[in-house]
Image 1 (cartoon, rainbow, N blue to C red):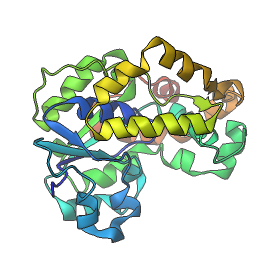
Image 2: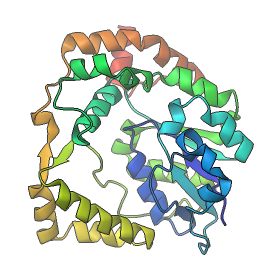
Image 3: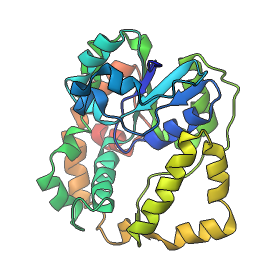
Image 4: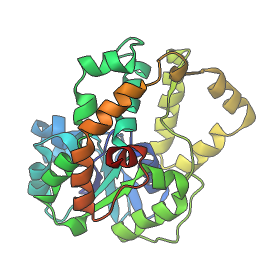
Length: 285
């Protein structure tokens, strides 16, 4: 059975579907049969054999990859990954931490885990929104275990601005052909849509997952862009932002202040200021 050689560790709501898609499309890479295996965080007791069984044994790929956003903030995961493979390459995608927390709330509403509460109500009942945005604390834990050269940190804002350039960075980091290009680079993913008819969404998603497991990611994207299919998908979408109030200015200010030290710590760890983030400028004002 193949052993994964690279993992994406999060953070949640930070372009994880994008990284999965651009690696699934690359002929020298293979992704796990399912997204978000959560092995090192939640299912470690199932053992390595179970974990490796989730990768295609017949794949000729040189890189085997899986992406589980729970890994970034789970305190047990870095040591478990090192015990499995001290040479593991690690990809970490981050975005503005205040926006990430709000997007986390929208995600919970979309999934039906909570009702259409305001962000402020959701935050009061779910401290993990803020905890997962404590980037400095979580990255420090990983860098205590792995050398910086094995950890690639990327910002979702840069992926949105230059998806081709950022995909090249991923490919170079993993040692696969950086000249490969795919039409999946700028595909819009995982934003704020909820299904009007969940059964239809689940049916279409199951078909899409089946095509991905067959290595037909690019063909799937072409099908989704066909006129009748696009109309069906669009008709089944509801923008949850129309139902959930926007974050209040006071909440944004409070969270920016609360996460200011975390952003400073992150900047020191990655050797650059995250100037792409509005909350970074606000925290320094």
